[in-house]
Length: 124
Image 1 (cartoon, rainbow, N blue to C red):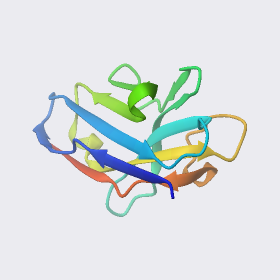
Image 2 (cartoon, helix red, strand yellow):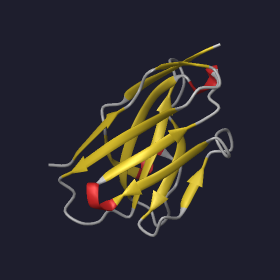
Image 3 (tube, rainbow, N blue to C red):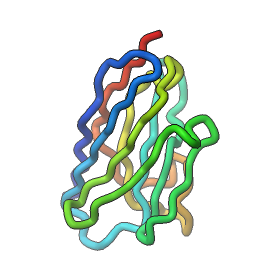
Image 4 (cartoon, rainbow, N blue to C red):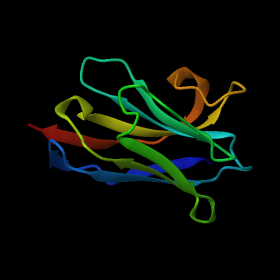
């Protein structure tokens, strides 16, 4: 059984930093892609950033230059370093794994496995 467990969500002031973590277990093989997505109330889930098995990363335009995705394969852990946060970054953040398409897209329906989410709130 695949499990993705996120942690690190918190309330921060605008301009602050956070690091989210996602520990993966139960994956039977090295997954091709992992990623972070977010969903604000009343909004659709959107891609934040993804990383493939070679370490190639892809980011949404809204977070480029501010957020960094990384992974520690020895610990089966995915990270999202969030810097220069703004109130627009307020959302539930989800970890996803195993893309069903050949690329590590930023489209949520392309991913098989999901965590339960961790809340990030940025106040002005």
